[in-house]
Length: 247
Image 1 (cartoon, rainbow, N blue to C red):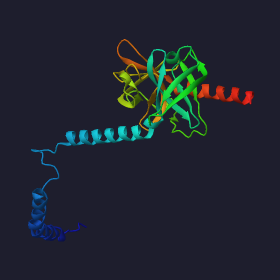
Image 2 (spheres, one colour):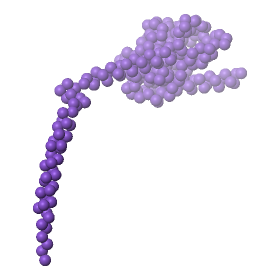
Image 3 (cartoon, rainbow, N blue to C red):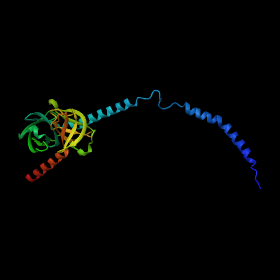
Image 4 (cartoon, rainbow, N blue to C red):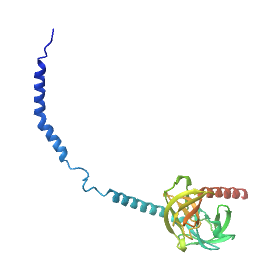
């Protein structure tokens, strides 16, 4: 027996009526969305590039200022055989590190702090291979500002780095550049122009104000070289071990 679906035409008519009744509302909704002002005008896009550059510039300036304020008081000028170089205070009792080539074979040097005080210093240990020397300042109950030593592996190629020292005899000068790579013999290479004569013995710093190396030279392409801070840590351990034995 064939079943007649007489209700289908009526259902179709009813559904069509509902759609037609709702059409003005649907049309109004679409028009409202199309009239909504977009967040970005595609014909006049916001200058996001210059804004981002400005933010990066401000951040870089703030970082450099912060690094300088954290470190500069612990950087000293060292008067050696070939003129003035730099150094950094490792311990509040007046133990500092500089370059061996700066003091050559002398046993005593003059050291001037950032506050202008001049001390006599005695060379207490050195590492000729890595061009480092430890100097102990003379004086009782010294309480000098010190640098913080970092893990050099925390820095990677392209990272912003800083140097503080006495380039051209101008004590307390900061320069900025980028880290390039770790070379042979535990040396860190920097971008060209970061170091100048007078930076020898001063700190190479990351953006946390931590020492990642001791500046020591300039290559023919004007890129800089620094001794990895891990060598400084090794030299300090040897110094402590010898002092403990001698006491």
